[in-house]
Image (tube, rainbow, N blue to C red; front, side, top):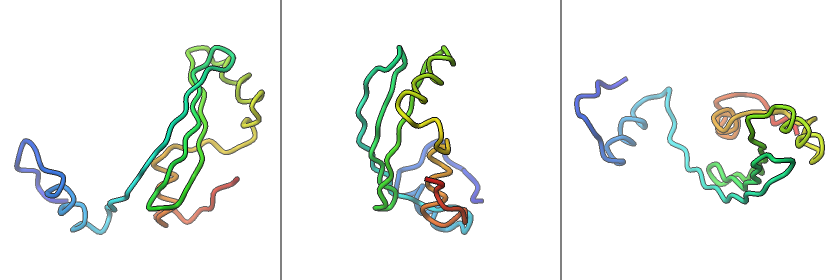
Length: 102
């Protein structure tokens, strides 16, 4: 890894460092989000493009876990794999050799 010798870097400077390191990969991510409420949980459906590959995401957030679990079941996502964006990015760009389960 390069030594970070400055307090801040421009985007171009940062990308130069990323591209110079084999363990890192710059990725273009775009997202459209649509929010709504279900069972007193804050929900979101998103269209996400990772280097042009489209994924559709859905989430449910609350401090009440029972409400989240009910929402997941009610909207039919309780049987799907739950992964974060970093894992999705790594699968799309081939850093992880694992297909999406659904």
